[in-house]
Length: 157
Image (cartoon, rainbow, N blue to C red; front, side, top):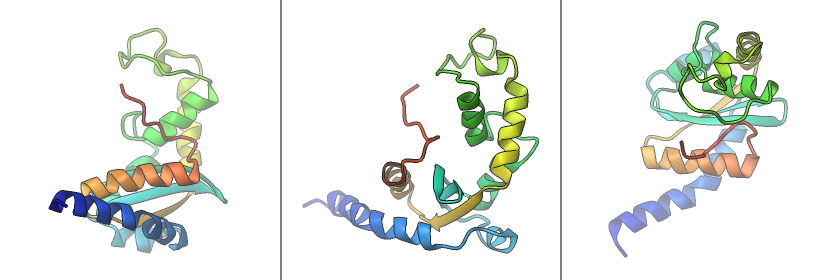
């Protein structure tokens, strides 16, 4: 067996324990968020027991703050963007911002996006550190599949 396959098998074996670690970690508060500075890993946004979005990043603190920032744009606050599109029943559309079907061209999108960012700011966030980018990708997908996170999409563009 090649070293790469053994490495991959190690990732697969770590998925369930990492998921348990993520679910058992206390929700982030400001002190714990500061400790995440510069650390790579997976983050999970939840409302109560409903897990809504999982993401991965090379800097947990920076990414979580960006997702929660009131001034973040649609390319920075991807989770709030997904919530706003869902609220307005906007299907997948072209990336061209000038396209008439683009979400930002829809009536009420700005208000929906603002509400979504407010909602994200008060959600519970949990994190687990994962240093390897392949491990992050596998764990993100695994968490999504196991927890049925409503707002993740893994469609090709």
